Length: 174
Length: 423
Image (cartoon, rainbow over all chains, first blue to last red; front, side, top):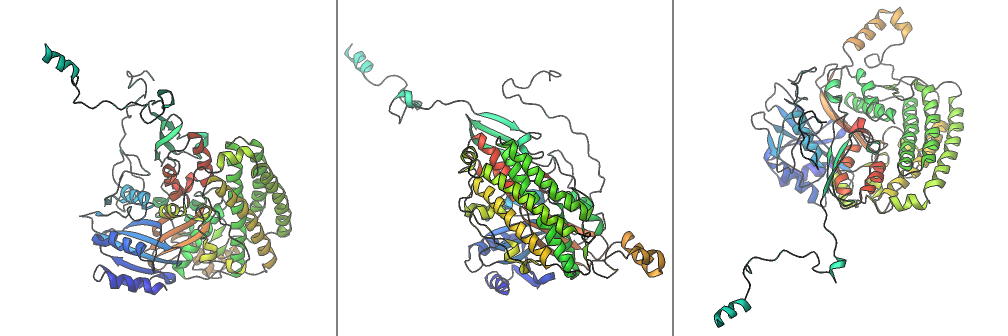
């Protein structure tokens, strides 16, 4: 069953899907070209023989020193056929933008925000690409390998409080 | 004169501009028309007793109806992934305890299975039974916490006291086996850290009997309680398609009618030797999610009893000093023992280069670890897929158009744990 997923992908997207391999523990893995990831995901979800209706986990890895530097990893699951596949997309540092898959699975929303927050990858077509776990004023991307473990951050000036009835008040009132 | 009159009778000045629509339009009379009030923005959290941890929700209200909602998370973020990338594989176990602090052994098991997948390591049978046994005890704890907190927040304080009594009884048993009440740090790569003490099985049976008594009391207090049913039935509804689309797993997905349980779909450890049922709901509302938890506690009870009956004495950890610390007499008595100990402590387990995604069925759904190893003693990347993450991200969708009061049971029934969602 599982081999048919990689075969179907190779038949439908020749050239855009490359280097299929069997990962540790028999997982099916394949590399996908960055520009085609949204189309590949659409196909994987829409084809009834594949029916990948769930995207349990999307994450990114920083391979500092390699080119292309980043990789986005899509772990997909079909609860219909009970099979899984792992798509890996290489993303260069010079052009860290790739198509968003929020149109395929709404659950991809926060995972893509996480990748933006932690690695600085941008997703074209994401409805609300903001930082997720860190605050908006955070400088840098903490999970990149060149971000230090004990990195210091500049002090953030206090945000203005918008009182919904009275408006921002004079300084020191609160 | 006549022309002026014509003008006066004709269309009045300003007729070209459209009239503002009257609120009474479409209703029988002006008295039936709804009043239009100003929308109000309410800030819930980050420290609010109903927000379970420190999540902030900014809710736009029209009267009492939720129009829109934005979630702001990350107040409990402590850099789990970054910290673990700078530790050896073995040192990461205490950090996984703090992910879902209500059922810490499940996180230990999930992480150990992921490392063992990379190592292609088989663990002794008794250690697998011990892992399943302690995990299922912790699953009961997790569900008890949810059920009793749900009762508490809907005004049933009694339920909370019964639930906490039952939970602490189980924690007492777990303290006897792993030495800690909350942060267990019980599992190791290659097995578990301690065997069950003498006569422990009998005590677990006694505890389970008492827990069953308390659980059935909770069941009698809540499941057919009019107030509880009115608050939970038909609120926080999510359909099967939407739940899949959002990436739900575990009891929340099964409450919507999708019978997906990793213990059955992809059995790991000894789950294929055990007999248990997977409850599946129909409506996907808060009441179904509550019922899932009640039934899963009964099934976990069955699993624990079967484990204790089937377990046989034997090794609890692999006898390979590349992965496991040698026993202390060997460390103090032999040069090989000292060297193995030193290498494991200073350099860590040498995991072959590669990447793997491993998944287990934790109390709230699929707990996944995406690991990348570069061949050294430290993980190159630990990606945590926490079960509560997609469920929490669907809260604005689930409560749109509902009353503000329905937010509280919805928040309860998804059982979002800040420690794992915010890492």
